[in-house]
Length: 156
Image (cartoon, rainbow, N blue to C red; front, side, top):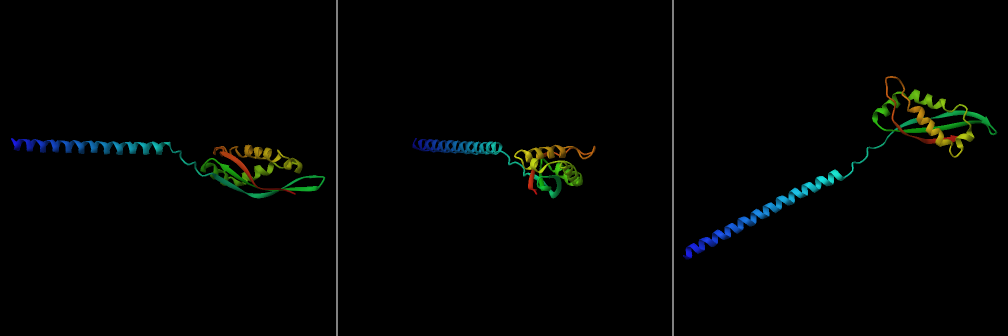
């Protein structure tokens, strides 16, 4: 009888060891799966970095302004255009002579006092943006210009 008792205690120990291993394996699997889900959630919840801004530089130009009490006046200005996408950047670069011409056509008749007034520059920027957002040809779509920025602005 002692041999049966010894055999059943071995069997009990073996069953307990297997149960412990099974529980440990299930716990490990659960830990790994939950960790994978939380890392997926963290990855999905993390906002994507915004794309870098795209700028198109317009070489500075000089424009004659009408005479005032100080005599003949000049405007020297340089611009950068912030565009929404590469297609808009390419369209502006390809049509740069038209871009410059449209901008130069905005200045005749502008007075130096008007351009140097507090709201003068902002109004001019809004007009430039409106003029440049028109399509350059019937084949091309209008460029998506997000902002017009002065890089240089001198009234003399």
